[in-house]
Image (cartoon, rainbow, N blue to C red; front, side):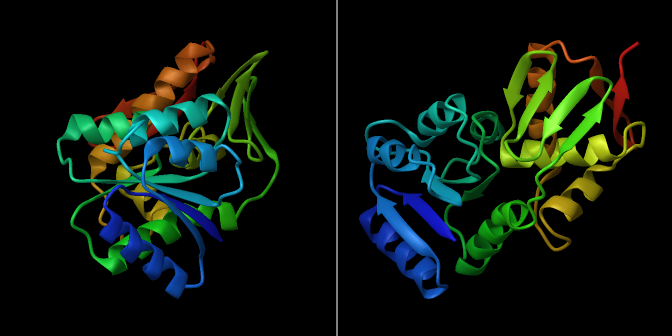
Length: 224
């Protein structure tokens, strides 16, 4: 697995490179947003780890540009920010997860393994529902000739719902399936991803909707 790390704190960057290299990852490290973009745009990485606040472009801006170009490499944000709206901003930009500083080495490695799990289990085929198509090869979701690209976590959430349309899925089921049974993931993360998916469905006029049933969970339905 090859990972790109962008972190402007040189000591932390050095530590991160050591941590991942010791676990036999191939790692490149940069210390500003402009270099992060130049490296990541090659699309040669299995995962991206970005600090949000960096010289040049910030991490959110870098990831937005990459997603707009159709690059779907899984991404995790490292951030000292803890306010909910800032977490949502990062997830809406296309991040798969975030990890507040300070963090433990064990948690960082676990989050990255979870982030890469979907890539490991990749199965190239299509899921269809009510004339919409999810391409498992490209993370693209299409209706007629309109297309939106999902981030890794958005893709996994949508994949689960498309495999069981009409079935209520609890937030805890999403977390267990995608992040792992022992993951410490706040339910607000699910809400943020679902909100972003809904926006993308609306952008292409997809004839399906994600309905929240209070006290139960989320259900994917066809619009009539």
